[in-house]
Image (cartoon, rainbow, N blue to C red):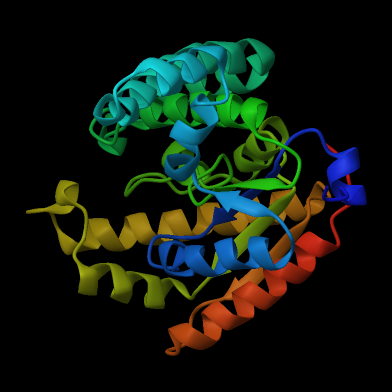
Length: 273
């Protein structure tokens, strides 16, 4: 029988690892390196999509589905259960984080029409995040890691930045003080002009189609500021945070640096949870 490590003995929930970075900074590119770093540190990592069905299968309802449903029905049935659990968990999250829920709703009400929060489905994605986070963290186990490339820190972009909104440092500092604190925040950085070049080269979001190119420039600049501010506020609040410079031209070097740095940081985490 395998002997449990000191970290596994002390921790009763999975480690939460979040990534934050401006559009074009390279979070998606470096996500595989972060997952490898978790494994290097002795953790079993999963993204939200990866964890959804296996974690549902740990519930009583999920065990019934896994035992009784025909093989070709299991995956869709487990996904339907996940959607149900995510919805109910979002309500539970709001009840536990009342001040954060109020902040998000009040922020949405105050924003200008030009921010296009309905078209961007800002509240929709925030509710999905809240429900996923609460459910998966409640079903995760010691020795596992939930990796969020668009977690609560990254949602500072959706909540505070648009082509017509320059993020306010005070509001982002308040927001950062309300969101769940991850075990590790990975701040992926690149200069704003590099971010814009990358976004334009891969193709901008459809909502910018037919609009003045300056709108995209303003959005990326404001989104970049939001990520810098939330990382700064997290650092001031004493979060475990590391910075990865992904502004160079060699993705392999950035990935290797991310894997090494994140693995080291995870090994140094204080047992808890």
